[in-house]
Image 1 (spheres, rainbow, N blue to C red):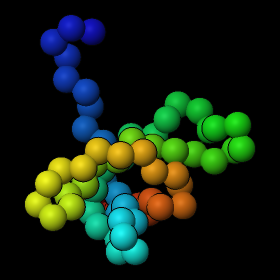
Image 2 (cartoon, rainbow, N blue to C red):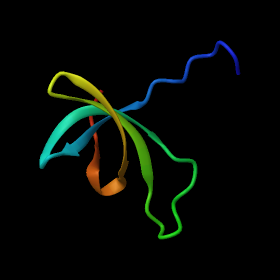
Image 3 (tube, rainbow, N blue to C red):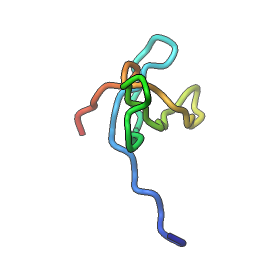
Length: 64
């Protein structure tokens, strides 16, 4: 839809370089063939916003 912004992601913790950092996630609509869930995530690394894909193993819920 033109002109409509993407909804913000849900708050989460993302494992990055062995540490848990705050970020947001948007889950894929369906699990992958192996049954694992993946999400598009956004978080800060060294002051830069990073957008990446991560599996459920690298994500944790974050209280709002």
